[in-house]
Image (cartoon, rainbow, N blue to C red; front, side, top):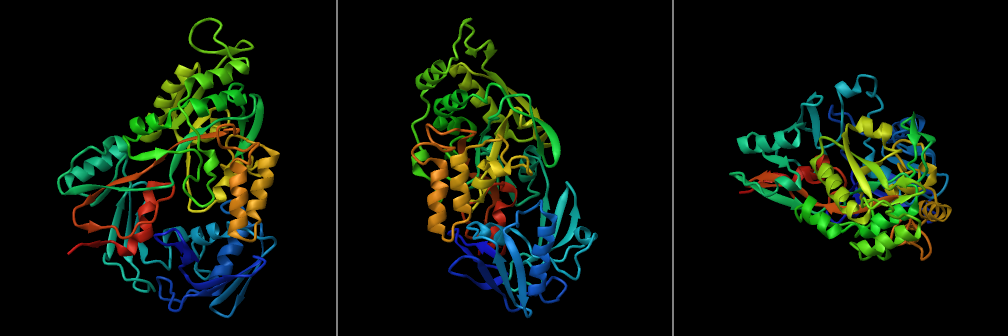
Length: 469
């Protein structure tokens, strides 16, 4: 229904206009004139109702429990009536694609019908996606009538760029100094951040992830002193230089630079001596002289998992392990698949990531209500004061009121999940620039600041892509 513009404002997409009631309990939309499915049939308010009602019943892909009812008035008017105000409703409205009620069935994924600028011509899982221009698209006519996307690993993508067989190729920072004839490295600022998710409960607990029973807890990272020592002891500038080759910046929260970011969460880091003092005051001392502190007979050592096919996270894991060692903490790095990480990631540290154009991820990552739901709240973190701030932010009737509580959840002067004295269930370290080799003469339009996930981040300006004269 909505999309973001280059300045990250939420604006109408399928909806030509929308309004929110003074109490923020009703959101009304008008379907854009001329909006049609790729088969030529009109997009209607009934399609919107069908999509959201289907997702409400599903209950796993999006949280729509706050929606009371959805009412269509005629073919172009639809109103969402909420049970309680939801300041982040724009997140669902900008991320949920509308489905054709008359054509959505078990075969839909093999023959999708859409209302965007392109439609699927061919899809081979794990290999390629071919799109063709949608002749019924209501917006700006795209210059390219066909787009082919190849699903390649980072090394293979670089090789394809060198061979001249692709026009755009994502590259990790370690490849950014390469030179490819006929292509130029383009860099886009993002809110895509990387850090460490650290279990906050002691070992021996049980929990769920995506409905599967898993082990929860780690006796080392459960100690707040370990997390706080790492938080102030890591040198983010140095990590940025080594891991990102300077193509990024330090991160202190998931939402750095956004309107709901609390600047009090920023602090001077790289303070090894202060980190060691925190550990010593909590009873962690190197009694046997091996360079690793221990407490009650337990060494300060734990495993950090990362996806084996992600070079950036692999490099990040190695660098933070090296820095942690200087603080007296031993981190063993372990590559795995995402399936393996989801199985063992609540009992071990994980190189985590995130970053959206809205604040909802703060609630899903840090609210205790998210524990054991989907992939939410990996550290199993719980702080009643933080929970209260997050809930008040989520149910705020205005964005200003919501932002006030998003900031207080990060740090309210006494407690929070971020900042120098915060609980640090997730230690955010770097915010990455998205890097692509782009064929000379190809313009990618006006790119807004990118969100998490370089794979699709460029698509916000897809209809603006063109060859320069």
